[in-house]
Amino acid sequence: MIIKNAKFLISAQKLSQCPDFGLPEVALLGRSNVGKSSFINAITNNSKLAKTSNKPGKTRLINLFDFDSKYIVADLPGYGYAQVSAKMQNDWQKNLEDYLLNRDSLKLLIQFIDSRHEIQKNDLQMQDWILHHNLPSIVIATKIDLMPKSKILSKIKELKKATNRVVLPFSTKDNRYNDEIIKYLEDVLLGG
View 1 (cartoon, rainbow, N blue to C red):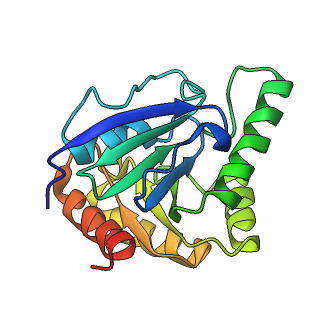
View 2: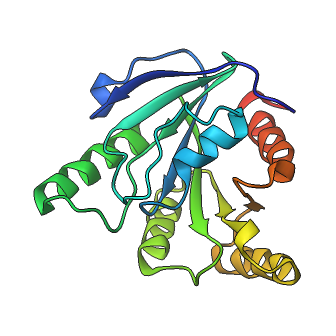
């Protein structure tokens, strides 16, 4: 499966600035620098679509992308480490909560977790928040190519057990996981 026509739509600070595009939406959540923007670039095969950086906290707005005029992908600011003021972090949290709880077109959340490490405290806090609000979500295990091949399956099982959700592996270097992810998204967002 291929995303043939993905394009950037708009950046917004808060929900009231996000137009209704009349399409189902998926939101990308994760710690700063976990690979959300790289994910967009990899599955669209367009390395310049979403801005990436080695510096955590680069994504500071809700960035909306159109995927083949079928659905919208929202790249959200990362949680955790970011060199910004406490006030700005509080504003982000308030704006993101409003978006996640009140965006009518939002059908799925994807929580990105770095597969190379143990699940971090802020990943577990986000998971608890998602489950508390009963929001449909899955986990994508990023940077899977940086793990020894012999440990990938056990890491996926470990994440499934820890999160009690669907876990899909992902790598920016190895596109063999892309088809499964795109198929999953289209099944959920478009009804298969």
